[in-house]
Image 1 (cartoon, helix red, strand yellow):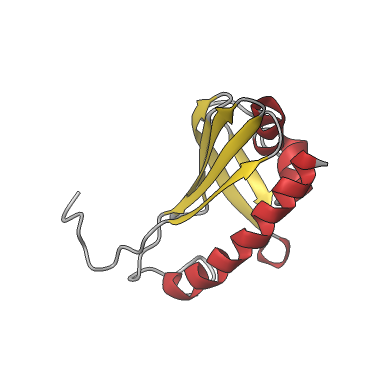
Image 2 (cartoon, rainbow, N blue to C red):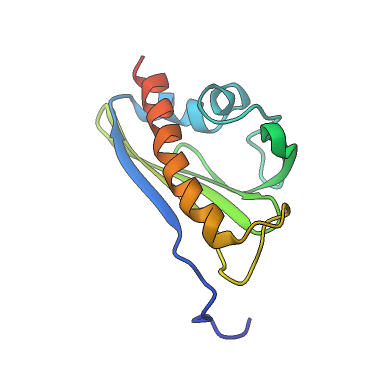
Length: 142
């Protein structure tokens, strides 16, 4: 494993918000192919542990992913591309849902498949997630 405090590790991107929708509805939006497509990206996701799928990242082509944690309706994690993982955490607040997105696997010493430094991409994606999570809230609250 080496030294966990390696200089290169960058903090996870984390976004939490309370959605005015019941947990089952939010789970449907983050753990089904149609749901994920509605606010994030086209995909061929299936809610099966170990399932390998692709996110259609537009100009970046298809990103390979793999489901690593599946705990309905509270937690879904999947590997995304070669370095990243995404986790969706849901907490039932009696008719509302606290939703947390965690995008981890950032390393200042690494570059993406497209040769971009993680640090640069992280800054851009950190902003991008704000819009995506806003899309999610519009979708489940509609």
